Amino acid sequence: MLIVDCFGTPYEIGETHGRAARAHIHRCISFYTKVFMENSKRSWPEVKKLAEGFEQRIESSYPHYHEEIRGIAEGSGCGILDIVALNVRTEIAFGLFSDGCTSLSWHGKTRAILGQNWDWRPEQKENLLILRIKRDGDVPSIAMVTEAGIIGKIGLNSRGVGVCLNAILTKGCDQDRLPVHLGLRLALECQSAAEAADRLEAVGMASSAHFLIADEKQAIGFEFTATTFERLPMDANGCVVHANHLLGVHPGIDKKDWLEDSPWRMNTMNEQVADLAQKADEPSLEEFTKPFCNEEKGPSAICRTCSKEGDSETLFNIVLDLNNQEGTVRLGKPVAVEEIVHLTCL
Image (cartoon, rainbow, N blue to C red):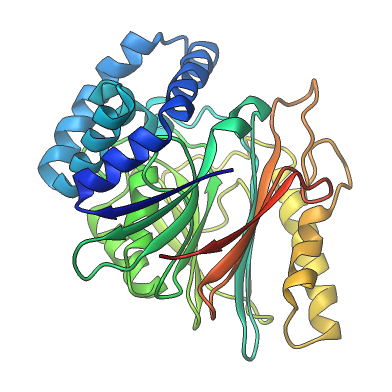
């Protein structure tokens, strides 16, 4: 995997990202050009037109993110609306992506671990990268896995705050609120999981998703739609498990399960974690990874395989040791690892 280290001002961080990942970003735009046309019948020029409103809102409310996006655009030789469109891909598509991810946090007596499988179309695997950021000022350093050109994704920061992502499909999008991937970035700039959840709820989220946010002390299952929020606490084992359906109370929201396998994946993960909890007060990093290797009821399993029934598969597994502010990224399915990258902050 490409590893990009970025330092300095938001623009300098973006310009480094854009220049180092230029080929990845151009491929990423080509990939989403195809996806948007297949899923929502929108051409890339139409997508960029939709991105204009988001750009105006980002520039006025989050100028540091806008500067970073501008740096990516100029570093990669793309237009700024190309990069905005990547960063608001969830909102433009209104959740029509079929990625099925499963996430888990586990707090034992002395150890806090967070992780997930991230599932998406196999052709996007080559456009994944490790982005490490050290911004000027009193902001935590960040290390994350992301899609090229996108400024927020899955990872941790130098304060031991980590975040994972599960896609959720509900109707509705509010362009005046914070897009999902910028919300992930905001969470990674916080000092604690509680601060991240409070700040995200205060600004409001533009569409629906679930963030599993954790630090050394606690984990918060943070579900949201464009109009509602719900926080899911740790269970009796100190765990939070989530997949791709809403678990909390969301008034006025249709909670239809858009991926039929999502409840099964979540229940299976809970069962496996409960079995592990009976054997030890807290898991080792190796034990924590085992449930993510489950291929029961494949191809739509926790460890997912692309098939004619679904076009997504597990592209990477990530396990984050929040006590030590480090992690492991396994590219490919965790049962068939293609590359292992040690994740640390700058």
